[in-house]
Image (cartoon, rainbow, N blue to C red; front, side):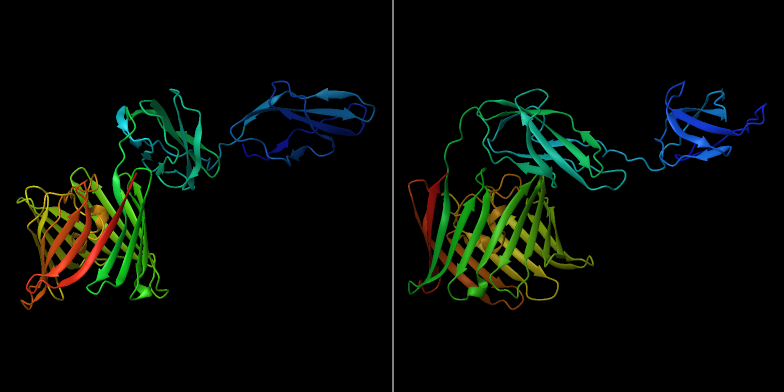
Length: 429
């Protein structure tokens, strides 16, 4: 039955010939008592107010003559129609990280979950609940649009926490995930020394560039700011965010003519998987990683038409250091880089020549499978197209008592002339 039905009945006759009017009663009771309309002179009435979907209603009509005598009809019932498009809640989804029953979790973990889908196509948001109860009720964050959330307030050491996600669509329908639990680190993590500033100087001692670095609660790169003293338009700020199996780098140039860039790096249990590069919000290139039987890696770069543009070949030593890189351009010059005579100290995060061939945040990051533990003392860059040597340098390092590079001198391999110095400052976190 429709939600505003037309109800009708047989005309009543009065033995005395009196005029007759009708009163309509309707509600959800088997003996309806709710007066919908009185003084009806016709033998039918269409409801003005819509009834409720998929509901049983009872109704009757009372005929009254001019002298007040009444006669009731039988009680009829009907069921209203089911909603044509009832709102459906979002579909079930699963939590992904930390895995259930995980241990030794950092005090500022990133919690991740599978994206939920809504059968009606409604927009959805997430609520994160987390506390020490097996059925958590403490709302940590509401209105989350992403599928992960970094806890900015540190948890307690050696403590079991329970968490869940509730997804809600725009009509208020909700779906809850299962509850996962994890245990935080048994003791507070040791402090770690990380570079916060690197100053680049030319052979004359003039500062040509300064790079500053900040970190998030998990001691991962959060932001780098590079000030170029020779060309302000080349100054640049990069911000980094992390999700399960994904790192995003957003690059903002000081040059107003240069659009914002975005790099998205994906990795899985094997290490690097693929990448995406956007400029001005438009995807331009995709990168695919392949693992060779000889232990090398390939990084194939394609445009959005699927055409191969460049293939990068990487060869590594048994200790994970990069030895040789070949940039094979489909159209353009092919370049070879070599890195040799590695030391046994900690690789310089900031200012390393290794950053010429791979983004710094990928090197040594847990999950990318690119350890690069040490520092090369020799470096060459050569055109394979012309055979010309572009650069051949030796690198001299000064280290602190933690085996970290505090000073790097780049010199010409042939003449020994100083080319550039890079001085790094460190801070305990």
